[in-house]
Length: 400
Image (tube, rainbow, N blue to C red; front, side):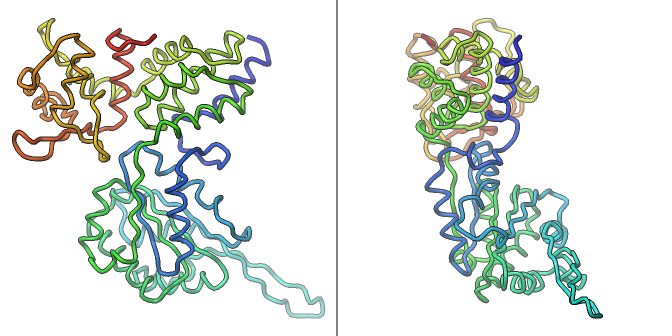
C-alpha cells in the first residue's frame, strides 16, 4: 500500500466516525430545523429544552456542535456537557457540570507594580457545599451576568425519577426568575413524559424537540460532504443503496461511508460504486457489535430448516414505520412478499411477531396497543439496518 493511499485511508477515519458522535461543525450534516429550534430556546430568557428521540439518531452529535452555530462573541459561552448515569444524584450531576466551568479572577497586587494577579477556580466554588435547585439558580444568575451558560445533560433518561423531579423544580425556578441560562436535556422519548409528570407547570418553560431519524437527503449529505473532503464522489445508484440500508440512522451512514470509501481508495478509484457498497456491507456485518449479532441469532434460531423467523424479522425491518418507529402486522405483508416471493396473510406470521416480543426470542420487538391493533418497533434501533444488511448479504433483498 502506497504512502498516499494509506494517508487517505486514515483521513476517512476522521471524516466518517461510526463509533463516536460528531464533534466538529464541518462534519455535521442535516438537522437544520432542530438546530434552529434549540438556538431559539437559547436566545429566549427562561426557556429550556429537552432533545429526545430513538437511540442512535444523533442527539449527542447535535449537542456536541450546538454552540458552534451560535452567533455569540467567543469566550462568552459556557457549555459544559455531562453524561448522566443511574448512580447520579442531583448534587453529583450538577457538580460535574459546574466543575467543568473554569473561571479567572483578577486582583490587583499590593505595591507599586500595579500588576494584577490571576486566580483560576471552577464554578463549583460558587456553592457553599449545598447543591440544590435554589443554589443552582443563584449560581447561574451570577454566571449569566457576564456569560451565556448552556448546561447540556446527556443520557438524561438514565437518572432516577427523584432526580428528574428536582430538575423540573430547577427549570421552574430558572424560568420564574428569567435567569439568562439554558438547560438542555438530552434523552430518549420516555424522559419527556417523566419530567412533565413531575411538574406540569414546567411544560411552558421546556421546549420539547423530537429528533427523528434522518431524511434521505440528510443521509446523502453525510456521504456526499464526507467524500467531497476526500476529493471523491459516489454514483447515484450507490448513494440510493446507502439511503435504503441506513434507515435514517447516521451511525450506519458513517459506517458504510467509511468502508465503501476505503474500498474505493484501495482500488485506486475516486468514485464509490455499487460494488464498494456491497463490500462495505460485508465488512459492516463482520464488525457489528457482538450483542447485536447475538440478538439476531436468538431471534431467528429454530431446529426447523423451513422456519420463517429470519424472513419475518427481515420483513419487520423493511416495514414502513410511523414517526415513532412503530409498524402494524399489516405493514409486514408487502415486505414478506418481496423477501419470500409468496403472499402470506397475517395469521401466517402473527405468532412470529408475538414471539419476537417475548423473552424466548429476545425480546427484539416492543409491543403496544390492544389485540388486533398491536403495533411493534425494534427495541434497539440499530438492529433494523443490521437485519436489512443481513438480507442483502444473504440475497433476500435485490441489490443490483
